[in-house]
Image (cartoon, rainbow, N blue to C red):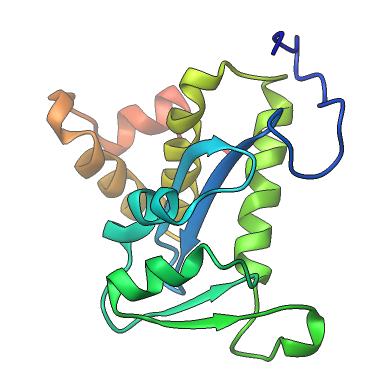
Length: 169
């Protein structure tokens, strides 16, 4: 397809091969895994590849009823709960958290006025770090960032982070 400039929308509504699929998983501790897998609807193999290593054994997978999650539940040994329509939602089982993450990711992409497809996984990683550090204090967030980028051999202190405005809201 021809590239869309400056965040221009797709010509078709809903799922189509003009849009990329970003798989997102989260838990109640604000751990987030997000990865761009393919165009349109993800296959079972795509879901296992993107989210399989981020889901621990005795978890519960809450999904929208798509059959692609069956293989993911089987491979990880988790229970799968399909939530189709708001009637199946409860105080414990709902998709509000994941839908909120999708909304924040879309809002982040709108701010950048469209990004190249090859960089989409990097923006998904940025969303993951931002989501995990949102519930932390400034010192804890600095420690998280320091630990995550420790392989780069960059020395960060709380004072330099405040001066640079890295965590400014």
